[in-house]
Image 1 (cartoon, rainbow, N blue to C red):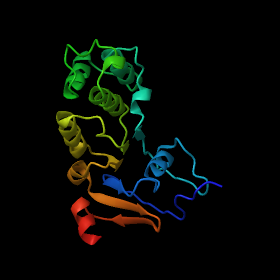
Image 2: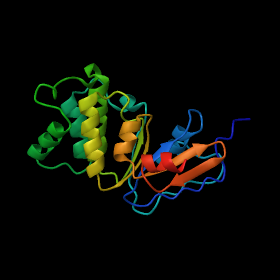
Image 3: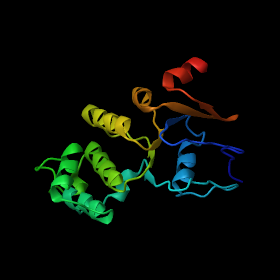
Length: 200
């Protein structure tokens, strides 16, 4: 039989919260994230997404969702057009806001660095206009500039964020509350990372 990761886990995340999920490796953080994203079914019980919630999920395997043969421009434009599109100038400004200039847009996605790929994945994700971002280790391949850019974007983001990250400085900068997974269950801390450390 498979290992029970968690049972009787009741979690409520309110609109506009930026929640960091913390816990040791193997405690079920990625499993919980996948259940919330709808890419994995719970073995018992059910996960209920609120009315009018539009989730956007960025997994650790984000690169697999980006067609490597398509250019940066085409990868981004396909996502832009699929979700309503708009003027070319606005689209180009979005490319620039995510760090892609005229020299980058014609590169095939397959030759991008890890940091460039994650920026492209985020750009495509933002075009879907999710109001719940589910982010699994989003800073793993980012350089310092990319991390700052992501931090700023998430701080300004008006929707709800649920993230897993081992990057404590990033969690401290973004999270407004913390969920901790342990073998005993899930505990919620209604403050940022420093509040969580203090209460623990």
